[in-house]
Amino acid sequence: MPAPQLRWPLSAVLVTGPSMSPTLRHGDAVLVRRGGRPVRPGDVVIAVFRSRPDLLVVKRAVRPVDGGWWLYGDNDLITDDSREYGVADVRGRVVARYWPRPGRVPPRPL
Image (cartoon, rainbow, N blue to C red):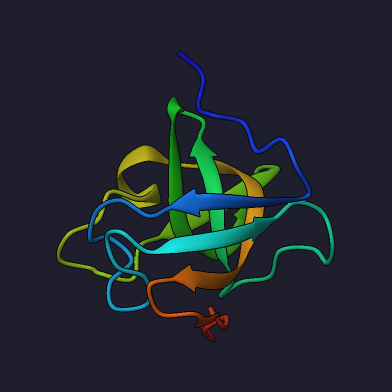
């Protein structure tokens, strides 16, 4: 089954799991922008791993590879990311958290 699609230029996504903690926590609601400026290393993105097209994930972009991106979770102890699933195709960039702690989700230098 394919992953859910982001149908609008600005979409709401609910974060599940601890892989992006402390930046984003389970239950955080974020706004995702499709288009706009290109993804840069350090950005938090919504993506689909090529080996798991059924799984929409929130991860941090590390570097471009093979027409896609290498992604890591911020919580090294509990994350499934490119180290396990390989290259991912980015669907959008997380621009803000709106619930329960509203604020920007700034990129982090890598």
